[in-house]
Image 1 (tube, rainbow, N blue to C red):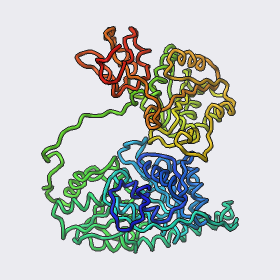
Image 2: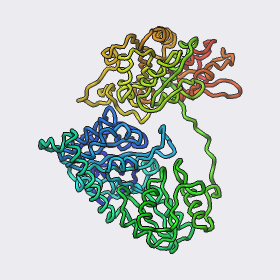
Image 3: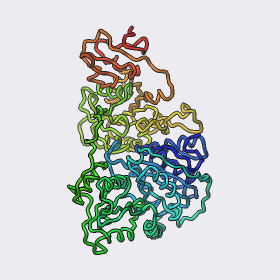
Image 4: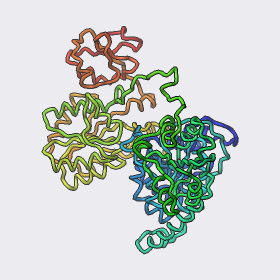
Length: 624
């Protein structure tokens, strides 16, 4: 049995934040869940996927976030509790559906989990999803701890049904990927089947209907404001003439800082967990007893702007500050030391607490730069493309996935990237304005997510570029989740279809299509050269399973390689490929047999044929 299906209320578990969120949904009786994987939210969907194999829960990896929201929105409007999971940039994809769904509302609870990524640990921007709550006019909850994340998720379904609106549950990386002890509650038995009563004047959003629905949404927002004023997720800690208002994980940092700085009795804290709509009366009452107020929020000054507006309405004149050169930045994550220092500065008190650098026993860890895995087929494809295009003036638009790391030396195979699926659309634009060969890259999961539309556009408008689809048989970057092209039988799962990328590309009318096995370098280079010479839209599918995914499927391993005495120390293997299985020892190239996967790409690159397979993997002394 999956651990999150444990139905023993009162038991305590050590859970990742994302596990706690999944458990909260299970306790609420969620029946339908859908997601497109995206870090830092990926473990939520992984747990739903696993639990769906052992329970009546329905879960699907949808083709993209917009589709996942449409699936769950329809289920919720049959009265079935549903949940949609995505990361912050995925909300951009889902926004088209979200804006009008807010008008339509829901009947069963619908919780939309959006995981923001301050500091961009795994994202192309650090947008603040709180603006989507304002834009759509929907309630938003923000947990401050792992345990609260579970409880908020559970209660978000109740709130959704009370308001008959979707509820946005916003987390940040620090909540998603922290671990804490969580007390389990009772599991509500899910109701997987619903009903739907036809009501076009509610559910069919032609202009005449939407005009009425917008008024309904604003009325619901007013109800939500009153609920926020009395929500247990909005509370005041402490007392004093100075005030701090905060949300999310910032509350934990603030609470520690107030204790460290010995400000008890001087500072009171307003924590906003039900953060949109703002609890106006609660905020006004809080401000009325403060001499000055500091607002601590990661990201944009969302709370700050709203709170200053409320203070102006009440003609309050105390200082209210948050973002500023000597206070908090709109950039990156906060941390306890930063928050403590800014609070000390703002309230003019001594920062007597130890900073992190003053603690003893800390060791600087060696940096671990991001890189393609040893044996990654993308490295072979990039090398083959570079060789095939070496006499061309080339620009390389790319896309979101492991292969984005192809931008790093020595590969240097990425020149432009803005969002999921942009490889094909931007390739089309470059092909119209540059006298260069345009070669773009996208992965198999990204192709289904949104790159396919740009390819259709390119065929219709007769653009001129080559798209290389890096098909490694999984959604590798976020943890090997399935997509429509995955063979689910290999995972021991039946009941799924399978979409063949090659057949899709043929059906789109692409003028030149080829498939390569990237570990066969010579043949791949020749095939790529033919595609590059084609005038019009050409597609090359580089088909080779992700090496880590292959290991998880227990596919037969290939023999690792070693560098023999034939080596003349040219170092083409390192300089051209940059495989992390290689290193320099005593000024000579060596291969770590425990990291080498036996892909043999380096052996094909070596000019002396000095790289050979080991007889066995025990040590590099076992040579042939």
